Image (cartoon, rainbow, N blue to C red):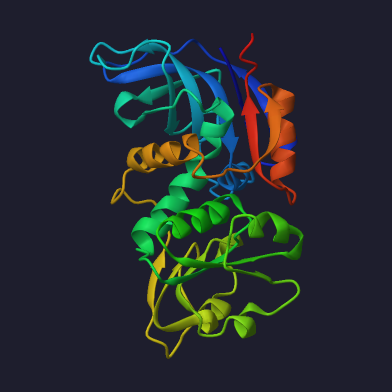
Length: 308
């Protein structure tokens, strides 16, 4: 079977086709034929060599949807042909081996591209809103990075919990974000959110790049507010702030998060923004990573032609 990876770190051109033997499952595993993968910024960072000790050659990727084609002897409740999703490793391949306990069945009315687009951004947004922020009805929630994959989902999930949501993004995304039904939109490239939203937020969720500008988060937060950020820490402050840095956690399992997200998406209670559908080929992965390296709008999905 074919996989797509690299033997050295660098730009998108480092990708090459890597031939591997067909996968065989261990007793509690399932092998899927990959139908779609979702590209994430973490894949780009990994490709650039942020962790030099990463063993090479590497087949990257973490988000996958596929059709079950083999199961181990201990797997009795996962029929062949089932379409499943998972957050795992080494997904840029025609086949992926999964722990059967980690997979989530994809609803029949969702395409592989729709389902896979939710995996990493959806899990991150869901845990940010439900666990780290612990949002309650009536709270004012300010989301920075509201136009991104995680941010747009955090906006929608916070609204479903009864929060009044204020969104911050660049002006070019104004229409898209306003269409989510936010109570207020602030374009950070036209106005200073620290001034416009001073002391307004019960909860601040910062999912902008690297959790930038913690000083603004503090300025927007009320006394005793909660700040949840992809940043590791906040600047010093005299305010009484409960701070949580977003990180992987099993307090809510990935499977539980995905099951709820798929339910919401399949019943039109959640929107996901797919910006690019690319072919499941070497050229498709190179093009996808070239897009990751530049400003882009929407999820980048690599998908197999299901008519093949």
